[in-house]
Length: 356
Image 1 (tube, rainbow, N blue to C red):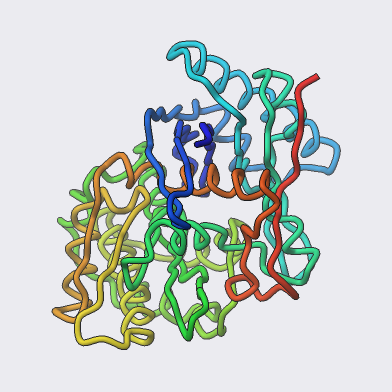
Image 2 (image 1 turned 180 degrees about the vertical axis):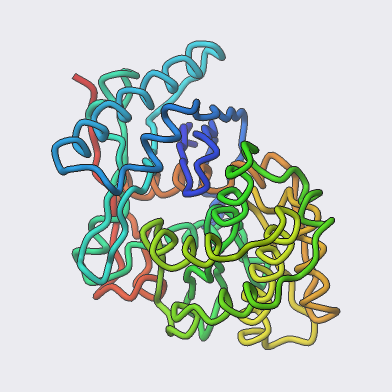
């Protein structure tokens, strides 16, 4: 049994998720327990720094990389010391600032060495770069956990800043970014000073804006075949202009964005479902949005059973799976699948840092 602290910061910019997990292999099956977790909300300064990182010079980006790594290490140290946790190592995703696999690069700020030095623990991080170097998308990475932890479900859907899906197909795991999720909803609410739309209550009061819905549904990305992935740059270039050009109420903007998110998800699930009744596990912050989940159920109809698990798993599944990826990397076992990313081969990805 290994005790790992998994760290995740997603594109929705909600904050840092820390999940202290026990992970073990029993009878050739991987098992887990999320023992304790904590979320650290970004203050306005950190939120702005991470959001605007794509516009930084190389020098300033590297400064952010190092300072954010130290900040992560400080949060880890506080969490570990407060609860007197025994941690074998930390597995950190970092925060994605740049993701352009078509140009051969991806970048997650949060220097592993600075993190390790600040918390005094071994760190595994930088899980995406190796796959990019092998010609892959470097994303999504969570499907390894879907395969090893949650294979009882036909589909695993994550609703973070971006929606992504994972499923088995012809004895291989397939996964890709479907499109938008909390990224567009939070962008809209932040225009009026709200961090998010709690439970989708504001969106529920709105009505569809047909023009906006059509424009979002026509985004070229949706026509691409997998493997495929998107990042914040895509959102800035392709989506924000549509929002800015749409003159409508907050309620209608959120209502329309929610319907768009769910329409695109439903299209993909129906396209790949081979059963009369499929099972869908939904995690990520969007799973706590009651209006979004109900809209998704309505669009899927009776063909798919939608399961929303415990709040602990909803909020910490990604941090848990990066903890698993760290375990697999330490054991030099495959943790990134070519069937998902389109890389030349499977890989055991991640860079290991010892504190000094």
